[in-house]
Image (cartoon, rainbow, N blue to C red; front, side):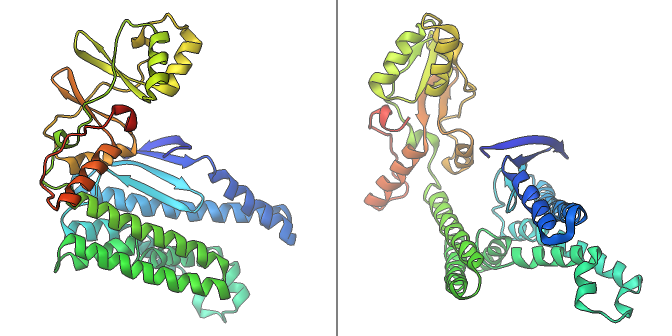
Amino acid sequence: MNGSLHIARIAGIDFKIHISFPLIIIWFGVSGYLSGGGMSAAITNVLLILALFLFVILHEFGHALTAKLFGIATRDITLLPFGGIAHLERMPEDPKEEFLVSIAGPAVNAAIAAGLFTGLLLSGFFNQPLVLTELLNNIWMQMMVANASLALFNLIPAFPMDGGRVLRSILALFIDELKATQIAANIGKALALVMGIAGFFFNPWLILIAVFIWFGASTEAQRVETKIGLRGLVVRDALVTKFHQVEANQPLSDVIQLAIATDQRYIPVVSNDNFLGIIRRFNLIKAIDRLGGRAPAYAAIDVDPEGLDPETPLEEVLPKFATHPVLTVLDGRQLVGLLTPDSVQQLLLHNQHLGDGKIKHQSTGESTDVV
């Protein structure tokens, strides 16, 4: 995710934090200090928010490690100011596996809450007269409530929360995936509408959560519709075959002139018909500043030359667009075309227009429109 810093690698999974994450730590510390509790309250608040995010991390590792049981890798876990995200390479196709992966995160928090409740029970905490201030000031009680809240909130039956995927996986046992997704998405939108209306009267935060749920439901429904629309189609069907490329020894001054004249943002570099890599316009300008216009084009290559096989199923490729806006398609070492989100979208629109999801397609538009 853009704006994230790599912190560690745990169990083969990259752990990152968003650069804005420290702001919430500072905010909680300052809030505690200004509330009249001084430095002691500030430190307590910081420790509590750090504990909360530890529980979020464990929640995400629940998803990641369960997915690993089904052969699904996790690219990274990123900690954000409002929670965490485990970026799985894909979601399981089997509804039972999706159910287990989705429920694993809330189950971790529920297990922690149950463990803390048991500890408090055995310690005799609940034997004393319980008053509100006692409950609010006990750190173990606070952590129990935090984990129970995380579990319950994430089980709200709406995308992008885990509960939306749990609901979809249960529905998919009886109906097809697209219909199950649409039903779960519509339930999420209805819930978002109710929360949004309630937010106007009670708490503005509900409005923000409602917007989050609404767009999450819409995005998931569109993603599944796209995935199903691409079934049976391969990379070759969505290729961009008209684009400009340069030879490895052409000077960078020629490359920048080509980029300006064609508005092409990604320029392939070849040598004797062998593909070497891609130059992105941003790095082209940096290379010229650093090396000068006479430097060879290959000196500005910054995209890995590894390419796709033309017969790769398109639905398997979609997750790669999260990190690579342009994908190269190779036949051996020869570049046969480029694949972009726009070229895939054009294929979908073309097939929808003709009413045949199996029609083959090669982009005939200029490469400058899509790369």
